[in-house]
Length: 118
Length: 112
Image (cartoon, rainbow over all chains, first blue to last red; front, side, top):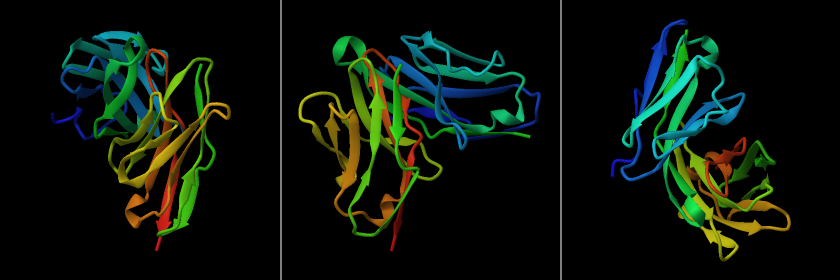
């Protein structure tokens, strides 16, 4: 398997523009996570899905952020409108449930998308 | 809720010396425990994980960690580090059911 694939790897956009980040999880994985990494706040969980259904979006910072998972092989994270403080590296990760009643056992991360909003 | 504390933000060490990166966690439920490594401009890679069984877990690249339930710790160790081990290391917990909660990370700097 090619692993978790994210696109684009780098994105530079102007403040106010819409940004869409994309993720293809590992085939067969039933959990998908979106994380944001910044120097100030470290790794933050934004939202995660189980079987394409959003389970916890409490980490989504504002209504400007939205995430979808229309099918098991694709997810998007959208920021509209973007602001300079959204500049960060965004990671997608996927996992296969196992162990006790479906617990996450290990997450595989993509290479990340480095977003710069100017 | 769960939280993870990595007690050192940076750890400098000379090549071939031993190293320990400390991790403590807080959780009201049983958890799985993980250590991830991140090399510059890359994603996170799993080093090792504790799910159950033996409390001493061996991972890739010669790393190992010991789960101590009474002290709620999961410290990472390596007996002899190399320059190539320079990276940021993240401790994480996964509470029963779902998601990963990460610590703030520890930057390991190996000097020659």
